[in-house]
Image 1 (tube, rainbow, N blue to C red):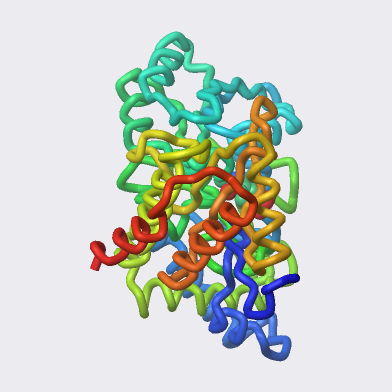
Image 2: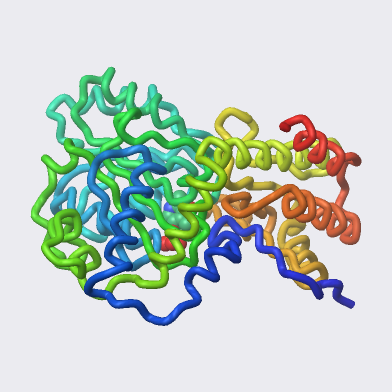
Length: 395
Ligand SMILES: *Cc1c(COP(=O)(O)O)cnc(C)c1O
């Protein structure tokens, strides 16, 4: 039998739960795409996105997903043959590096593995070796959505500066934007890429690049008219912002999402709420792990993401658990998204990004607890009390 006859819950790390308010804001007739409300609304969306990113630099919006802005940022900043250093802490760093390679860029990867954060000293030493300053940029992810590590971006900036190296710093904040603090300008980040379907709670389809003055100075001539930043950051007509038709309904959706984050809740509360839910989930997993094989993929709490948690299980248990939760309970967990050296059937993820409250988080954990019991997976007792206790203590 199945018990899944209520509202389905997705705790996948993107796309995330779409708030009813965002859905309702998109339920409308097609607007005028040349003048009027949509033009003004877009100006306000761009201004508010910059607030969330913490920048007064340039923003470009693409009709595309996260992969589109990996490509857009590379196409505007590097020419074929240019050298860059990409820091991988899971599959997403490798993905950005591969995009660069396909565009002819010489992308060197420093791989910190699937269970570790970027070690700034290692980066500093590599840059110090590059005495001719051939490495044009260091690229990394803030949160790697596969491993659920969170990299210390200000520490990375310091390591680059201490090496006396002029490399630009580019950060993929696709999973972390709107979930954890990001202060692009204050942290000395030159490039941020992001997308709308994770912390920004909007259906997939729109993505962003943000770049500062140093990146603007070092741009190359972009061979692609579609990726080219020039018309997008200084449009002479509205359509040039998007190199064509605006993503009309996404803009309304984003406006609603940004109002929820910046006006109703406040960015500080958004970040704290994500931290509380992350800690509640960690407490549950650590308690389950007192017996049996469930473990957090990232053992050190200070470098764990507040947006997604990757959990290791005994052989095959993760896949069995996901199937049970999905078919019996209407709860969709994130699949193991790993580097090839990991067993994907023994890893699952809980996305805790965006539109979530305690009943959703605790409901997901309790459902997982039921699934583990039903499947006979060994676990410590008291996980739900531990999670509930973290939430109780937070307010
Ligand atoms: C989701 C994600 C991507 C890829 O985004 P798509 O929309 O699937 O193309 C890239 N980087 C990170 C860190 C992500 O979380």
